[in-house]
Length: 424
Image (cartoon, rainbow, N blue to C red):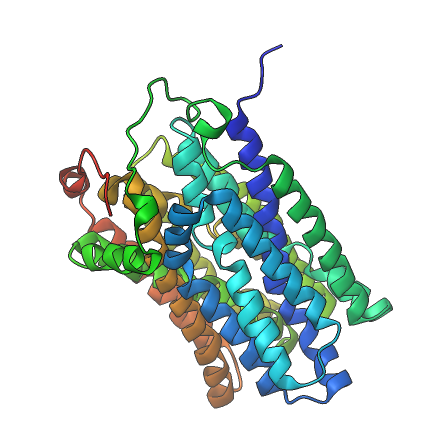
């Protein structure tokens, strides 16, 4: 029987680690009402804690990538998962709102940073030579799937028992994942005496990276990236990606549905439904990114997403659950399908060694867009007493993003590639 290449074991471990981290970070949404009811905290304070978490996990991406270079992959995953575990445990004993901000804003925000930003491209780049796009697709799919798929389950547990029981489930998953990482995770293929999947010659390694300051590494990566036009085009399109997904849909979709008389549980299940189809769509996107021009993949992803966002208000106005389900399937397939082609283009332009850092900064732009949409969506609702304009404008922005990626000319990508990126 043919032995399974250890790169696929690393992929599986990383996949479930990202799902657990995604569950922890996104579960904040179902705890707003329970925390408000039990502790009497103002909703704006609770939202502030969760907003800080969203911002910190996004901006920490490039620094997490640099720390992986310095400390190693396994150690960073153990530190990050342990940080999440500490945050979950402290939740049981918190009493004041400042403790909520510290625990869910800072501790859980930083703890989830590695898993939800640069871990996917790092593992794919270091452990895979062939099927790299597929690996990226599978891992990035787990990001949104983890953030969406268990929300209805947690909501039911809170409704039937208490928020502490829901936290207990999350705590159990976190402990199991920490144990699995400790047993099976490795820093590099060399550690288990193999080459990356699909590679048959030993690659050159940079021995000096371990001696560098991670903060300097991160900012040096940014300093070099901002000189390249393609970085701005990718960062701009990813800003719109974050704006139109986790920022708008992730934050305001349920409320938008409720405003049209759709029950809370139904809306939550629709959001979870998107997570299931995101797993399919992003995995397929990774497979396609190995075979087709990534610029055109991004063009069609953003264009179709824009069309779906513009059509959503019409589906809701009809009050048809069937049409809403169709939207959830269609939008779910495209939720973060943009990630594998974006990572692929970034790798082509900046090289395998630098692309982890650069993608971290590109993802920071993604989270900035998410934060803008989360805030501005509420402003639009306050002004118009409806989310319609927010979703319509997001659809228009997606069309703009499709034009951004087409401006990355194929010959410019090839021209920008440097044969050997050994230093940062």
